[in-house]
Length: 520
Image (cartoon, rainbow, N blue to C red):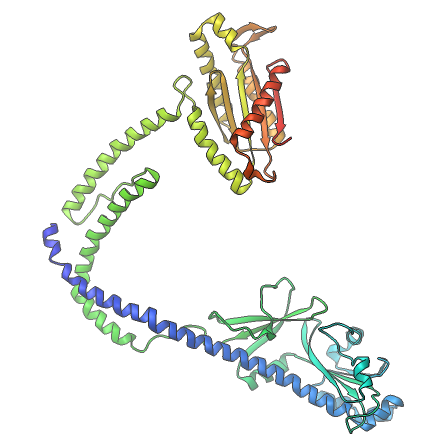
């Protein structure tokens, strides 16, 4: 198929434009409104749960007030009797009112009488201890001295996390039924938010929720009573209720009724329109993609080459004849170009004498090493290697023998480094440089000794300093991965340190290794 024939089919793009317009209206106008509606509904469910918990707590406060502001209870605190308890404060009365614990305390904060449900009896001492968490800004159950001195009724209520569960508490000063006079003490009532109460609140508020024990590590979850607005749609949302004086936390989970965006009513109408569009334009769209996508990929591969100097091959199988011919010719040209480029790149980073990496290749490699050092704190090691008495060797045996000796040394370096993660390069003259992606002192020392011994074992004759063979001296610097302020150092600093160790190795008599930690 030719491009001339294909151009006649471009009018079908109008149908595609209409379809895209409808889809844009759906995604950019309709869906945002639906999302807002779902968020509002989830926010209302949270507000209902908040109000339901608050109302449940308020009913406990009202009941506690009715018992505390009572002449008979004032008399009982002054003269406790079993008859009063049996007649006026029976256990079944509190069970019927869903009260799990009741504590009567005199004005000196002494416990006079208490009732606790079976679920809380094992923790009686802990509950009593909570009453004495006084003199804190955020928590107090018992009335303060100022409240007792006021001789008027006062109440305290709130939430506590106790034994992995949520409880309500309400405390009211005990005084005559008139609501003023000498305060005899205070009455505390406790209600456990158990499964039964959760079910009652769920039925009352028409929202489904659960309360479970939580770990203090969930610090990223918001507080339930913060009343912060819900910002994301989710099947459920979690909040925390925590004590202000210890680490106990419970997690409140609200399970939403509407958890996803609904389908639009006019989807069926759009589907009919799309069916007509597909019948007319399906084949045209397919042919369009066969032409446009290969051209886009072809153009992209050329544009990307300006960034990384690498051009990708084009797919060679196309429905359109002209594209197939162009892709085949392009790929053949690319093969020749890559082969020539690889050859030229090899020449730029390869030492012409020894065949190993030259100084230019070393500099390119060190840029990556230094970048990892600065950005990721990845340590490494650098070795500077110098052939001992090489000038004497050249003067005595000639430059050709000197070139052969340098080539043998370079080959030996490559053989040793084949088993390590690193790079061996000729730095210049009779000097070589090795970079290792390892900063363990003993490992690096072992590698350096392997290099020194392998070169001595080449048995290249060089009779000087009471030695029979050509040897090398090695200066090593180990760069710690925990070094502070690494950004202020560059590779030249490390290389200078390695040169200093090389000098010390030569001063020590040559054919030796000196290792130091960078910065020491």
